Length: 129
Image (cartoon, rainbow, N blue to C red):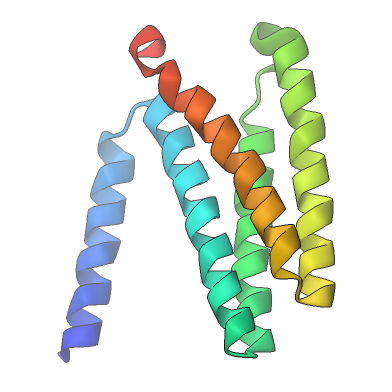
């Protein structure tokens, strides 16, 4: 096994273990972290003029935001859940646009929005677990 394959294998095991041991709150944090990471990778792909890789990373970002939407609890979350749902819809539309136009500024906008949501989510960790 070469070193790249060994690192990939380690990352897969680490991710699987992290998911298995994570609280519901931590799982949402992990999704947000993953979305932000994929957006950063998409920006890197844009700088390399790699359209296929850009599309791959933005598609993963969109899927992650979709997962965040599916995790919303409208019964318990009320107006906050509705607002987040609308914000996630907006983020997805913007990422589709970023993928179509290879626009780093749009990705930055969505990353900032998701980063703000994550910051708020991180701030309630001691209240939910």
